[in-house]
Image (cartoon, rainbow, N blue to C red; front, side):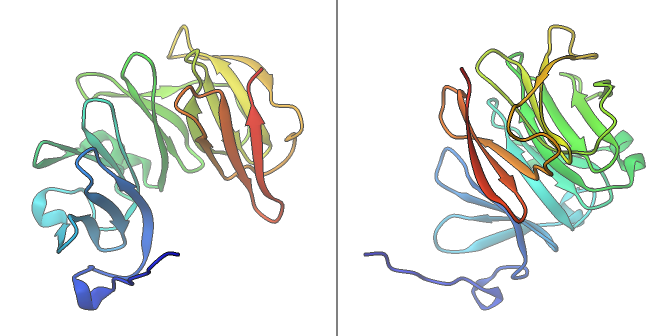
Length: 212
């Protein structure tokens, strides 16, 4: 059996709308909310806002990379990141003026992100942002990488796989059979080897994808 406890604003949450949740290596929960980036260690909530140097309080998503840096995607003001106990803004992303909806890390350790209806971008080791030219004429919803370092993009017209030998201009290998023309909203790896993925399609359910 499972025991449930509900945490609300009465317990210290900045608000009850949670847009993304993850757990870090120390077991702390990270929460993206409409009123800040929240950390929960099991007893109390700590909330971080623009007062702590975030670009915006409304946080749509977040992602922690292999170096322990947590990337924070905002509703309108681009990308912030947390390194150690400090937050930093990536000023040049503010001009995107749209939701940041997905992050992923490639085998080189570089972080990529999706800006809603603006495409895919990547951040280099000096925190400079570059657009990624995929030649896709569809909206990208979510991204991740497979075990070979290929970029897998979930779009409003199916799933597409790209080789990333040149990260500035990935080469499309193929669409994923069985999901053509479907609006794939979210994609996550189902195993650490990144050979199996789960894909969510509104109104149709969840698809399991095996790389062969």
